[in-house]
Image (cartoon, rainbow, N blue to C red):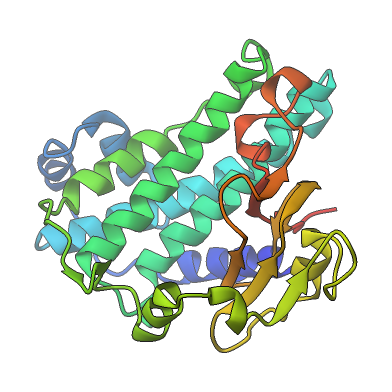
Length: 296
């Protein structure tokens, strides 16, 4: 069983086992849902959800928690429905858009789960960021079908209310915009070690490995250096890429990777994927995060 499949199984068990605490009335649901931008799906699913309809709502924080749990529940169902649509893809373009959606729903579920995890130390701003990311994921899923001109078939089978329910949680958790604070020219969230690395006159001198097309480094391609990097290095893992044109699609699987080149116009990484070639914008990045293959 894959890590994501195990996560889904445990999460469904948690949702089912946490039901039937105490009940709220239909008037309570209507009152709270009317405070959201999408009251109809809110009221319908809270009333009909077997795992959420018996939770107590005493204050706004209770309603937000309930709404987040509802989003997670509906996103799990939507993900399962999306997986079942594999056989309905009639051509490579529909398959490409569908493949993105499977991953994007997985990432949405994981982001929402972070907001629900009591062991995750997070602020209201963190929650807003994760929920915004989750909502963007679903919009990106839909955009892929439009980009490739295949929105008239498979996309129609994927209709659900997760986007509206997510929008509700964003409205409930809304935080006012605050001007970012800086120190030494960097945002305060940049750690001292990272700040020193960025301020160094020659970050390449601190490189863990060197990439060079002429063979003077440990690797001749950026991808080879990325793939050999440790999944967790305890700090920034610096890869110095010497000048040259690297024709490759780089997918980063490890955390805390830092690429350093010789400057604009000297170190160039270029790929060839595009919407015109049948790839969604989401999957066309020349340098991006490696997709986790959680399903066969």
